[in-house]
Length: 289
Image (cartoon, rainbow, N blue to C red):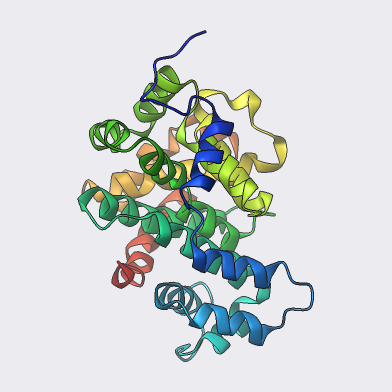
C-alpha cells in the first residue's frame, strides 16, 4: 500500500535517523544517560547531573512531593528526592523530562502538548495504582512521554505536521488514523522507536509505543505491555473528559464503557478514584509549565 507523505523521511526507521541527525536527543539527556549507563555511577553522580538542569530538578522535586508518597514534610533537594524515588526511578524521570524539554516548543501548541503530557502522566499513575503488578511511577513517565512521537514528528516534518496536529490533537483516534493513512505509521510508533533507540526501558517505551494500538489493533499489543499501554490510553481519555468540565463521576462513567477498561478489569469506582484525585495531582505539577 502506498501512502502520501508530508515529505522525507518515509519510514519509522528514517524518522528515527532524522531525529538523531537534527539533535532531537538533547545534550542534558545525553549527560543523564551517560551517568545512567555507568555501572559505577553513584547517587551523588546522578544528583549532580539532575541538579544541573533546573527544569529536570523541578519535575523530580514535584514528583517526590506528590501525594503518592505521603511524606510528612516537603522534599526540598535533589538528594532527598533521590532517596525517596530511588536511583532507577529518578534516572528514568530525569531522562524523560530532559527529552521533552529538548523537543518542546514554547508556542501555544507546545504548551498544549506539555499540559496534556503532565495530566496524562498523573492520570496514568493514578490508574496504575488500581492495577496489580504495574509500576505506577513508571506509568507516570510513560504518560508524560506518550506524545513524544508527535514532538519528534514536529521537528522532522515541521509546518505540514503542525497543521495536522493543531487540527486533530483533541481527537487522538482521528489523529493516529490520519497519520497512518498519510505516513503508514503513527506518532506512538515513532515515539516508542525513538525511546528504544535512546535506551528508555521497555516498561516505559512499551506503553508509549502501544497505547494507541490497544484501541486500533489490540491483538498486536504484546502481553507484557497490555496493562501499561491500556492505562496510558485511559489516562489520556480521562484527563480530556475532565478538561471538558465533566464531574469525576461522569468522566469515570464515560471511560468505564471503553472496551479497553473492561479488558483490563478496571471498574467504574477505580476510574472515579483516579478522576477525583487527578486535579490535586495536576495542581502539584502545573507550576512546572
